[in-house]
Length: 340
Ligand code: SF4
Image (tube, rainbow, N blue to C red):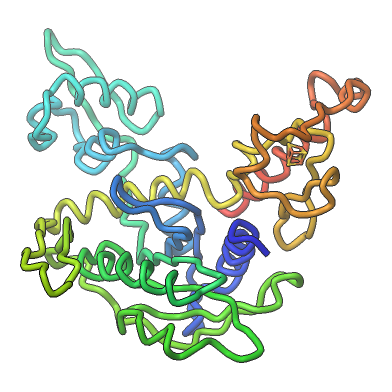
């Protein structure tokens, strides 16, 4: 199975079973392909609680971007001039003013004009809804070359400490997982062995991760020497302060809240006659024209086998309900909303 199918099944498993190491009564939101400008994780799990999600709900299903978060987290409970209420953002105030108006349109902030001044008052307190953030890197076929590249990426994650835990998920094989491959991994990284992908996924933790210091300063490794006999260069680092990390973690959690892991349908050709959703545990995409699972990358405008949905499929409920492609998108959106 390709990495895309592996990733979707791991997401579905994590949604039902996270955390794997204890019986917590928390809730997990799972998303794909999130991170920072420099690093994108395959799977991200946000650990939260029912109360956390209930308190987050008044802020709408769309994410709060960094400007909106600045307003939401600092808005006062009583009418105050916005420049007195909000900390200096470190960028021009006109962007804050725009964010204030957007927050008002989104319904979580009241605004009023007093003379030339805009005063603000919060309608809801932005909750502390994110307990932990887990990053999982998926590598179903872990060979020596892949292990080397991956180990280096994971070392960056450990040094930065943006996620509370970092895991590697790889396929379990009959021969087990080659210990030499796992030896290459940093000891702080947990390892999940994944099997039975065709029946959902069975996942077993075979190495427990260390909890990283997310409130401590982190280090971004910008460049490291190759280590050859002629390489005398020094590694280059950049400091990541705890405030930056706190902001980034919240932005990642907000994006995960908005997108979930089923948002793959937004980029795939659900309007193709071959597009189907299969398997109630997902559902996962299936291409009836190729008789196999397709990846998000191939199910795009460039696919040569694309055939538009016949107009007859749409006629019955068109244009209110749309054809099967629209129905597939609605099904995924309903599942995503239920999760939130
Ligand atoms: S034929 Fe191409 S566009 Fe159509 S569902 Fe299959 S992969 Fe997607």
